[in-house]
Length: 193
Image (tube, rainbow, N blue to C red; front, top):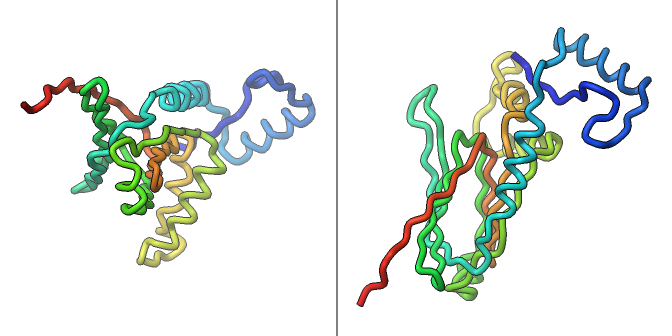
């Protein structure tokens, strides 16, 4: 089943789309997918992106980044980021669930040069074009070729509207995760004597 972002009326998200353009767009979606989706996950995606971007991680210490691959078909991969906030003595674990793509670029010399306060900020987007561009860029690194009839890229692109592109910005690099959701857990700790 395909999911697409389509306005249900010409006043989609506060912007005005010309009625003629709206109806042409609607007809194209109907031809391609057979029907319009009854619900659109755009509002949820926008809430996820704004919730994520408002989490304060500035000057936290990154203590670890882990990738946990799916170990069998049907299971989900995840990425965890361990952060420590010295002035509140709090450990936080950020978990990205059902990951589709992960990109981690880090210069460890720059990261340690900014330690202990080496985390900058968080960003997230649900822009389909940006998500698809990441997927297509990563395809060059697959190290495997597929016949057109079994290439998984089409299925990945169909899943794009259900995913969010998260970025964790460090002073020294960036972690990019395309995932279905995230959560953050806080753990208070005690200082060692």
